[in-house]
Length: 389
Image (tube, rainbow, N blue to C red; front, side):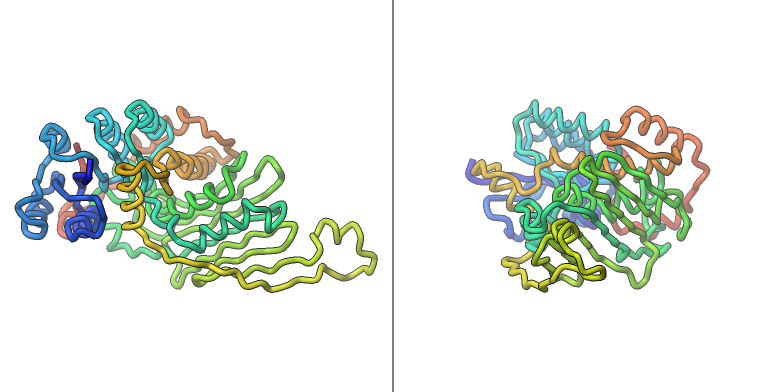
């Protein structure tokens, strides 16, 4: 294979972006050959903007049956990521899915099993992994530069969303349509980076507030506390209601502290490790000598195009993926643990009880009395929708 024929399923806001840069030839070794959406308006847009050589389909099965693609990119509402990926694998296609990997770990695990059985290249759109700042943080942590970790604090409240955003689609911010709120739509990137850099904790205690700041039924304000087997603790705070918001990652270790904020790394390095200083110092008040170090960061964030190119390279050349699809389950694990902790008002251990989470989610869907104005949702829906397959 010299070129990968790609089909994009779901051509709303994100899917149309993928389709456009593929059509422009921004991805070496890739060709956009098809798009799919159940919304006639989006298919009309595709015909007007992508050209007659890109085939359009109003359902995924028709796309699969046409045999005009070697791989698919999935950019639909969250619930449909796993089932579409599974069907893609069953049809012998490579898959790149948008984040999150799914709504609950049970369906994501089924997707991972299908991917493994197929032998096809499976990626996920964790585009923030291409940011050299977070690649450097991961390197500093894994190399032991910070010593043994003590505490992780991530405040990511710069996800402001207005009520009109939530009103822009009938599926948004509902248990049945989206399966969650800020943890499932805005913060999957941070949850992925958390587990990518620090690994998964042993247990979580979280306080999720559902529809606290908006007329929605899912979480829009979260404060979570995490504990690791080795004693490391973590705090994760996120919301879509703070203006202006903050995005600050603060990591403390035995050899100092790292702060990531405003697009830069600040590293305070201790001349003597804190635990050693604690045992040896005899002066009463005092603390280790601290150096503010400049951390070189090279490269640039390549974003969505970078992840797509990486996936195409893996298909054509067998190169390792920066964001393997199999790893998507870990961020979903964290989100599920946080929500389940709030639902049960208790600690939740990881791995999450998949059956319990699924049962609780279905209860929320069945008991929901939340209704959106369908006319308003239809009028404002600029993202396109895949309300059914």
